[in-house]
Amino acid sequence: MAVTKKAEGVGKEKKKGGFRETLLLLVLGVGIALLLQAFVVGSFYIPSVSMENTLLVNDRVFVNKLAGKPERGDIVVFKGWNGEDTIKRVIGVGGDHVKCCDAKKRITVNGTALDETSYLHPGDFASGDKFDVTVPAGKLWLMGDHRSASADSRAHMEEPGGGFISENDVIGKAVVRYWPLSRGYLFARPDIFDNVK
Image (cartoon, rainbow, N blue to C red; front, side):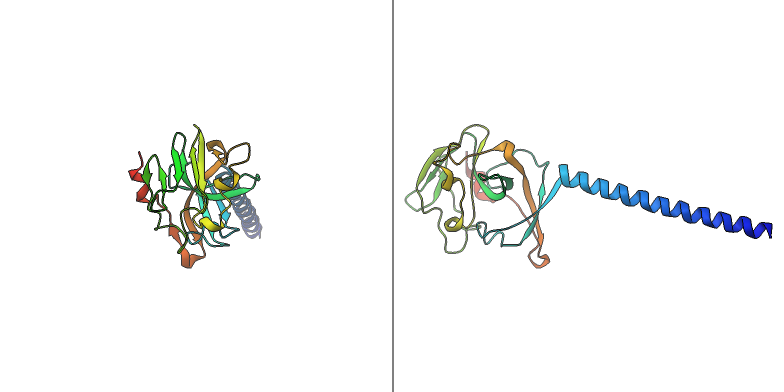
């Protein structure tokens, strides 16, 4: 009898220990996930048509919050002009001269014309509005890929910030479109920006 009771006691202790370990691992896992979400990777959904066809309404993207300084061509999530999370493509960085448009209706950056056909919405154009800006240091000039349906830097030129967004307002760079699964895609900077000096 004594042996049986002792065995029962050991079994109960093992069950309690197993439950505690599971609970601890669960709490630890949730804690790590929250830290990653806060400081490393964020998930964002697309609420509008301004980045079509690169991103459609209700697509979801992972954003790398530790990706470093935004570069021309990057797709970034940032605190937008109205204070909400916004996603656009970086066209110009600090010091760049961005102009629309040349004789072939292309945007130029520092005098280099951009052939944007790889990401512009089919049938869309570089810009319906003419502009000629020099991006201040620490700022960005951002535009949507569906130019005729995007309230981007062009739409905010008359506001105090001149349409520019501070690099400090960037939350991170879009790395991958993960939802829907059928449209999964790993983003890369378009090669056309390599020609800009």
